Image 1 (cartoon, one colour):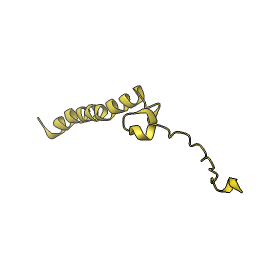
Image 2: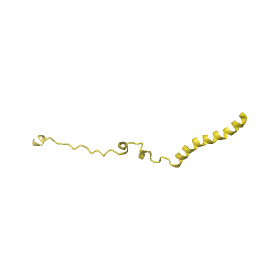
Image 3: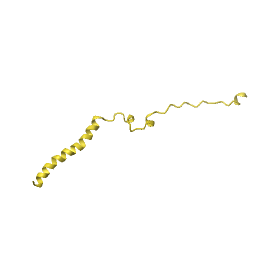
Image 4: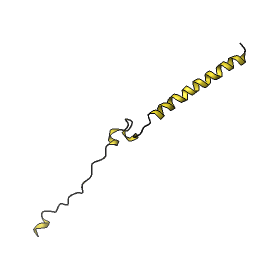
Length: 68
């Protein structure tokens, strides 16, 4: 076998393996994209929950102020 024959055999194999190396991950991404990234497990739970609504502080009157 000459070098040209070996190269002629290896080039299609390289194209096939490169296509699989790139094609399978791209196929997996296009098949199941992350539609709601905030709901994935990579986001910690404390960041997914919204903080409770804050109520305005009640104004307290001083007891001695009402006696005058």
